Image 1 (cartoon, one colour):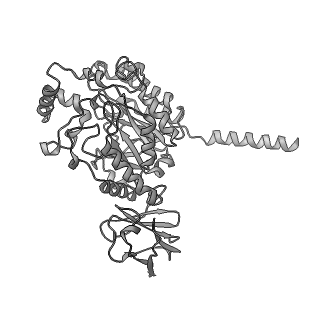
Image 2: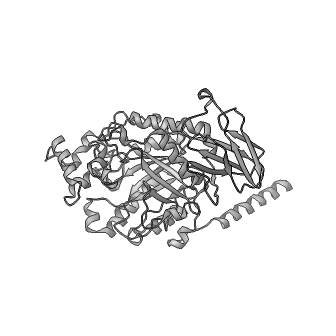
Length: 464
């Protein structure tokens, strides 16, 4: 009995200690920014972005060959580009729309063809897992304001009330979590044509935006909140710190959720959680200067658009090799890659996107230990182009985007490695160690013995 009482007292002390150690975050940027980004996000490295909504029905945008800039190619901006007569690509959108649907066809009418009849969330989630992704971020609501869940704030403008009559956020969340992946949501703070937003921003924030975001979090417990559409107003107007304080202190995912940096026109690369770049573009700051010091993520599509663009051709899509190299580059620089897919209006992931993801997954099955749970390894001087480094514990990984045809020299290594191996291959690797420099002589391997295309990884065990 005495042992039981002592054990109970210890448990009580541990419980009290945990209460005292729990951080409470205040509604100001100094406090919000002091919250560490949960480690799972930095370890995950690779996520899938999904842009899916009414814009998936017209599924059209111009191309760089049409003279369009990077933002002009975004098919998910269809409604805005169609409405903005001052935009340089408006004539292209207008010509396509009038020819295809007629001048009297309104954007809202696309809801009748957003049926999602072939949407199979289990198949999507399985593909994401096999692609090697560790998390998924779905557009719960883009700038058009159409919600993919039964949002009370978007009555008759959500996927349950109209269109597919289905809780798309809920169905995918269940499937993704079943596959063991982290689930998250993109959420647009502003809405282009919402009358309340256009006439009374403060009321929009209090009665529409904040309740809608809280509903999304409490209903589905997402572990990623990717805010966007913040550029119209400063974070004070959006009441961003108030929402983030609730997210970190009271929400059901307060200990595991990560949030990005798009919370006001002054916040990118300065405030929030992890920093975001987009097609390597930098907004309101220079993420490139903090790529190792602060958690960050590059987001982009496989093609030029986030939403599915049926105007794109094969040449507009990145190859599997380019995507693997992109992942390697971002991870070696301390970041994550959030690679976007754009499903069709009926709920299919285009085959070319499936193929790219499957190829990436095949490479990661062989070489994933050089990507997941790693940190960047910084040298004073890069030995040559196409060679990247990651580290895990005492092991160093040398990732070559071209199979090396000569000895690789790596200076300033801590000590002689216990072994040097080529991941996925049994071919012996010769190496030398002198003056804290390691020289790796690539093995001669036949095509049949090639562990995988796209990039090759040498593992230096125990040298750090």
